[in-house]
Image 1 (cartoon, rainbow, N blue to C red):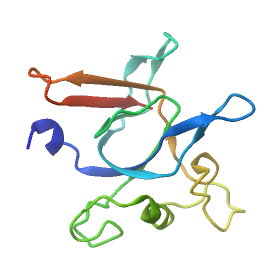
Image 2: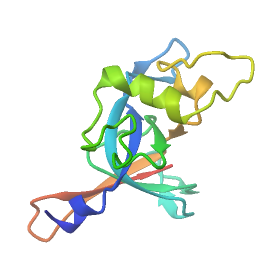
Image 3: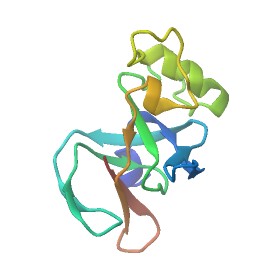
Length: 149
């Protein structure tokens, strides 16, 4: 197991961009559980439009991602406690990702009784990916993938 793979000890929920709405804003697909390393750091980066911005967090992830997608950190759920990930720490399926989200998060709107897993911006504290980059190792056998939030 490589250093890149070993450093991804945390879990997050990822909503990939799957199109645009009638106003041209990105819409997101269903939730997917991923392995990551989430660092709350301010780091300067260049957006896909070429502007320089400051990040709120940098997340190392296990797959390629697209700007406009959403991420939600899942603190404390490494599988050791037998929580929603289970005692083996296996990745969740899309069907169980909704249960996981409702278990670890609270709605951002106090008038809402339930979570809208299909609209994480409205009911969850999901962060938008503002830029993404990947860098190969020396042999180009695997990539270090970073998402700037």
